[in-house]
Length: 614
Ligand code: G6P
Image 1 (tube, rainbow, N blue to C red):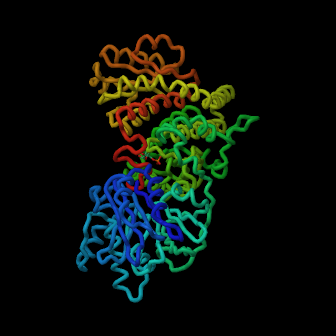
Image 2 (image 1 turned 90 degrees about the vertical axis):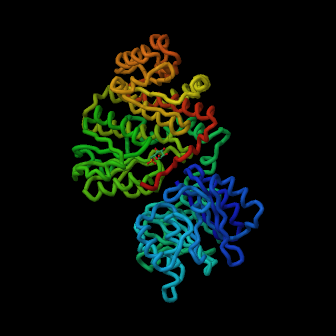
Image 3 (image 1 turned 30 degrees about the horizontal axis):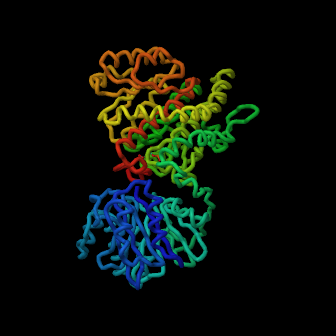
């Protein structure tokens, strides 16, 4: 979603701002803009469309400045156009603001400001906030910009990560956060501000992540931290980023998504690194050690997530129920938070989120905490809001994921969920030793098996050539491969814009079968697992209606090979680890189809990497 970059220091801010926006492009956006201090004026340049268009627009202008802010906007209030793009000026031009998040009471604030003679040029809630700050500043007695910002924010209901410039105080930037992340990079005699660490990493590794309600007053050589409510200086906690620049570059791959698909043997290894004792083969989850007694007493586990993380959660449900014999429910965070769920103190609520910032998931864990449940997190982004607000958790260690369509984060989530299920099963003594060791051994073989699948990626490219002009598709799977079918369908629709429906194969007769004809590609995930006979029957049903079947099958399955149009083979493995292998061809198929259709794979239209609004 929206991205923020800011710079204050001796260097030319413009290239830092533009490069920073490029680093943030992966979050998804529809317009971009910058504001810079020049000769005691604030110059705002903004454009609908990509950062490259903004850059072109700025080319003929003087953009040299030492202080500036920049933004990529993902539209919420008001259509994506030049006017609604950020930065926004207040009516009298005293303040300029960039803002991520949503001001929920903006209509009331707008009405109040209109009554005071304020008028607005666009439709955004952010512009209202710029004017509220200006109003506080102009009406107050000897109020400075910092005070005006703090006073305005105390009237705001909603979420914000924002940076403000004041025309009368051209030596500072004011940043604030509530529910929308903001990091400040500390250089020597200079500061960088960004909505995540990616624009900062090439300049400094020292960062301060703002907490909710923090307000930072930043000048070239000093940085003061306060809160919206209290005019008292806080001591910032400076962290060292572990991110490297290589992680946020394509390293020779055509797209980040392809790079991330190919990284999976490594990221899965990173996810279980240090978590399986090499001698005893016991699972060690350090992040949960303090809460393990309560986790073992849980009457049920409720997993909340959105998107791809929700699909990983379904696999987690199957694993935990089968092996640890603890009841599990999987919920969409956006439903859970509003549907008055029953949450008991002996429930464990587990949030899964790549970004750790998804607004609905964050709100759902806050609700669960209020009701007294133990709240755990499985997150990828270290230090993210969900990671910080949960009682304990497990990081997935997949590294930065930049492609909007999640790939390596999904397999890392499934890795962690498998480890968790195994840990619980051992503790509850619900898994025979032999079964346990065989699953762990198979899990350890996953990276090598994925390497084998990746080596054959050109076969999948050939299949993509046959089907890339389709307009619909159906994905079917059973058991552990049902969530894989859902995730495969989600990948295709996200990046190729082909309508793709994922279904439990057993449900096909209750609706989707009506869609099948000779134009419909049906992707069936049909590994040789305990559901094999059943899925073969489903394949027969599709064949009888002349559907085109692409089957993901276990190596050497000559029965299916002769029954379907196209096959993609995956190595033989235990049922528990088959999802890791089966998802790889589906990620690649979606990728190649999207490339053939000329789609913007890494930044699909309308989507955002981190959904920080509900
Ligand atoms: C967005 C992303 C998806 C992601 C979902 C949940 O829709 O585009 O890839 O699965 O959010 O995000 P989270 O960060 O909570 O896993």
